[in-house]
Image (cartoon, rainbow, N blue to C red; front, top):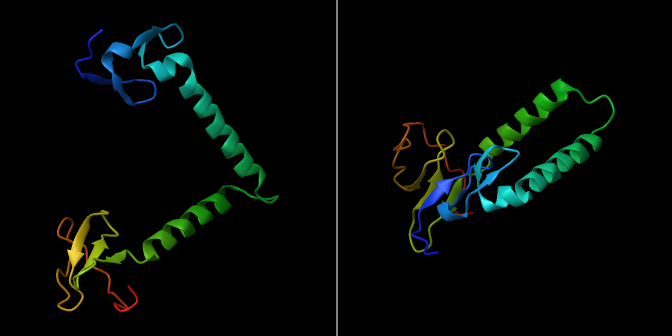
Length: 133
């Protein structure tokens, strides 16, 4: 069979696959990709569930929803505080990743331009130590 390169999105796993590889699955009652048809997608989901259960088992006794919320908030705050600058070799400019929208752009620390993110207009955080990059 000649493949024309037409790809379709599987409704079960959401991945793109060649359209000629889709088969009707008895359980899902719809056409699914070869991965879902063979059951690999379901096996991967089960592995993820086991991983989550192991993570929950590793928690100390007395762990509750409030602790979950606090740990997620702590991780999020640490991610925001991480330096989002990386030096561009051969230039004085650095590559900046906006905290707000995750847009990547060039930033000149000498002239301090641009003063805001070109995409969402959020203020660019101050670069504390340019020499360490």
